[in-house]
Image 1: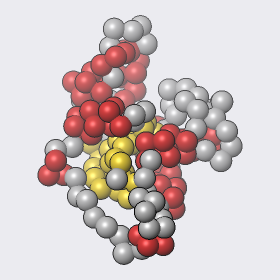
Image 2: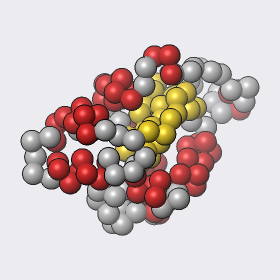
Image 3: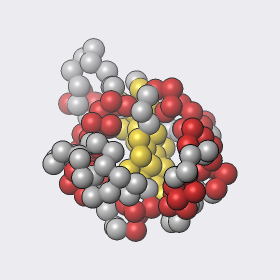
Length: 153
């Protein structure tokens, strides 16, 4: 079972969209195995966005991501990295297709509501920034037999 890191960003929290967007992951049958509301510190932001720290846009990115609490999550499911990225849509809400989270709720590139890992490797790295192993709780829903056919997971 694959895992991915998902962050409901400050704009999502401030706009009161947490429940509406989180329900899409639930509706899809993705399993939350860790979740907590936190305030991203500048040190965490530098770790999370390490590849962007030296870029000219980084100070604004850090200011944005540390401006308000976020909801940090780990989801588990078959091909969950790809599935979540497709659910989010293009990075810019102006270019994201209708029916995707960003296409339905965002009109910005930076304020695009939700971050999701782009590979299993980045998921593992990002999960390690925000969660300890003890904070991740694997579980099997009793409805599993109704979400995927045997052998699909």
